[in-house]
Amino acid sequence: MYLTYRFRLYPDQEQKTTLAQKFSMARRAYNTLVAWSRETGTAEKNIEKMNDNTATNPQLPAIGQSYDYLADCFLQQEKSHDLTDRSILVSVLRHFAQNRKMAVQNGRNLHFKSC
Image (tube, rainbow, N blue to C red; front, side):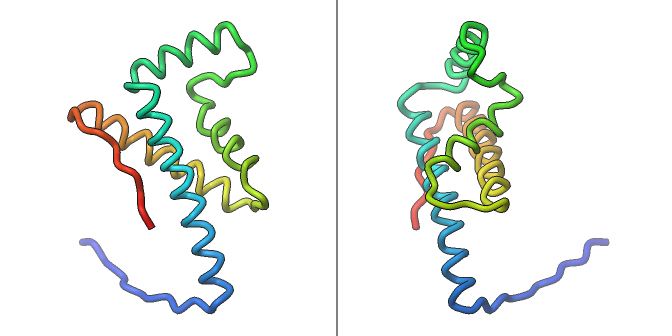
């Protein structure tokens, strides 16, 4: 048996501002990844390039470490960040990877996230 709890939050103005900033950061990161994916081509080509570059350039991360590496890259672009931003970005990267994999399998394009 599954139980479902429904609840509603009523954030104050400061919390609304913080939530808007977090969602905006996640949307910018996802849209940057979509643009990068459209520019560079399919997922298979990207993985091959990453493997080739990792072998020749030890500064690039291995495939398993790429989420953390990309999250750090996005965090460097932000003016200020805290610990929740890193977990948000790792979640965005995983979500993007799943969407890209399904898009490649179904022969569709990824779409940008809007406000």
